[in-house]
Length: 158
Image (cartoon, rainbow, N blue to C red):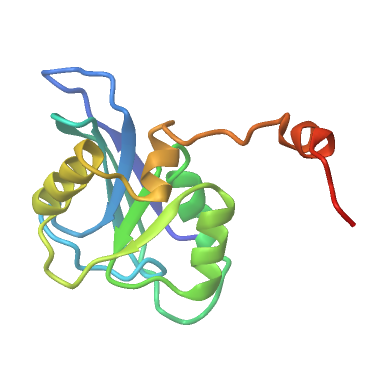
């Protein structure tokens, strides 16, 4: 049986073009209080270095922490376009699937406040983004495609 799902897209009074979309496993839009696999809802926020706003809420039916992976497909679909998802915990298989889709799984202690996690993330965006965050922000350096040509042109001693 497939879990009941609904997606609510939020119209903002102050529209802005978010740099990132970040999801939070929460039942109350205030704190992290769900394990990824059994999360009943994700709240998806758009943010840049100075602003954030709720973009969407995805809700799922009753999901147990039973190790069954068929429930993950619908969650992966709900997170398309997100750079990261915060939850209390995330199983290895789910984490692998998230990373394969370019979504960084992030663990937060139960009760962590979403607004504080967003503020911390914004501060990190302004100061020194971690590798996954820099990549999500489009700031990573692309590898120098000519590096092999440069190495071949060097003098080699045998």
